[in-house]
Image 1 (cartoon, rainbow, N blue to C red):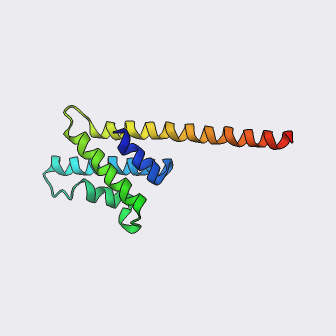
Image 2 (tube, rainbow, N blue to C red):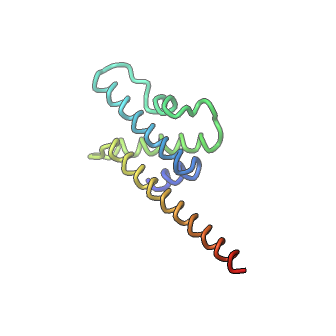
Image 3 (cartoon, one colour):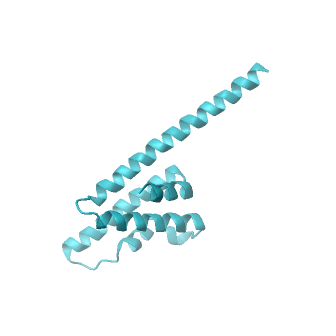
Amino acid sequence: MTPFRAIVVNALGVDEGLRWLEAARQAHRRVTEAERDRSYNFGFAHYLDTATGAHEDITLPVAAAFEALKGMYEVARRESGVDVDVYFECVAQVCSRLGDARRDRQQQLEQGRERRVAAR
C-alpha cells in the first residue's frame, strides 16, 4: 500500500493528501451504509469524487491521487479481515507523521542556512 500512499502524497502534498484520505473514509462509509440499508449505491469512486471535489479541477496530480485511492480501496476491500475505515485512518496517521518529519527537516535546513549566513 506504500506506493498508493506515496502517489497521493507526492501528487497532492501531505495536507491535501490527508484531506483526501478523510474523504476516502467518508466515501467508504457511504458505500457501507448503502449496502447495509440496501439502498442505491453510487459506488466508492462517485462518493470520493463528491467528497474531494476532484471533478472541479482535473489535473494530472488530481487524477493520479484519485486513481491511487481507488486502487487502495479495492485492495483493502478484497483483503479478508481488513477494516477499510481503520485502514484509511492508519494511512492518514502515517501521512501525518511524514508531514511532521518533512516540516522538521525543512526547519532544520533553514536554521542551518541562517547559521551559515550569520557566520560569514
